Image 1 (cartoon, helix red, strand yellow):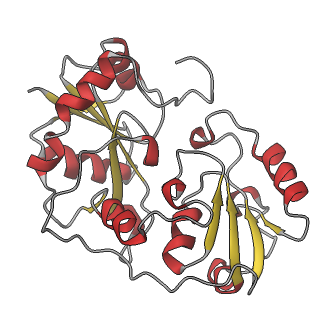
Image 2 (cartoon, helix red, strand yellow; image 1 turned 90 degrees about the vertical axis):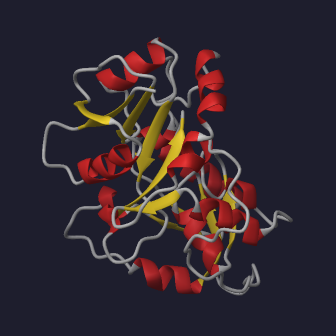
Length: 262
């Protein structure tokens, strides 16, 4: 199998993720601006680069590496992965049995009425929104939860505007209202009931008052997290290739074109 791991033509630290993941899979390192003939294409970031456009036109699997839900001091050194899509809409094979992966401890569930209800914003026009107008969504949620406060994404604020620290907000939050932000997964780990509006969220299986086993959820999520200082489970990841290829040949890629045809 010919595998291409596509890097940016700059000093972005996401290249470290691509190099780590791709090298262990035996990939050649290529520029994402210049696609090569391959059977599997790897890229950091959910954008239609020339490399991703080429892969989707040829109906081969892609692997998207993205920011993690948790990390161990250096966020850029930890990443998530998935076939043919982003976060919960990326596919992975069933996790191995009898093998553990590190993950944060799960906090006890909080009473939904014990604290604040918080609507969490996201970066406007981010590809993860897949075309949703985040501020229209916020307005809709404010109608449903009139007593909820809105926390803007810090990237959307003027740098001179002070904002309550994220950890402080999470400490007093008992209902997290999210579109598809990784905040949803962070909230569930803490034991905060979380609403989720888009199935691309890592928190989607646990949305609302869910009966889905939280232990299984975080175990599955731990196998989607890797760091650049460890060996990845190559055999397990590539065991999903045939299914990912079948999806790709059917054109089943997650939409990274802000909701438009890709």
